[in-house]
Image (cartoon, rainbow, N blue to C red; front, side, top):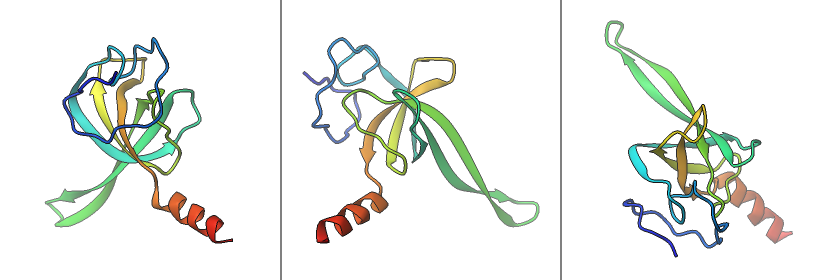
Length: 123
């Protein structure tokens, strides 16, 4: 059974592990606060990824723009498959560990992965 988390997201087809409490869809983890949209830059840790969001900032004094980036750590529920380069949406939740206070709620596979898979199918 999948519960409503209050945000419209794509449903995952993969079943979750029974008894997982850090899952917003099937466990007791509640979603609150901010949403963070970015690209996965590191997926080596177990059930944890690093997400990076790039943006432009304005220096009004100099009338110029600069680049900025933010990185956060997020928990990956058992019913989602996340890899490096994927575009994901993370929602804020209670602290899961010292540096993890976000959980992945939606995954859009990267365009690069789709291109590689398409090339492999043609061969």
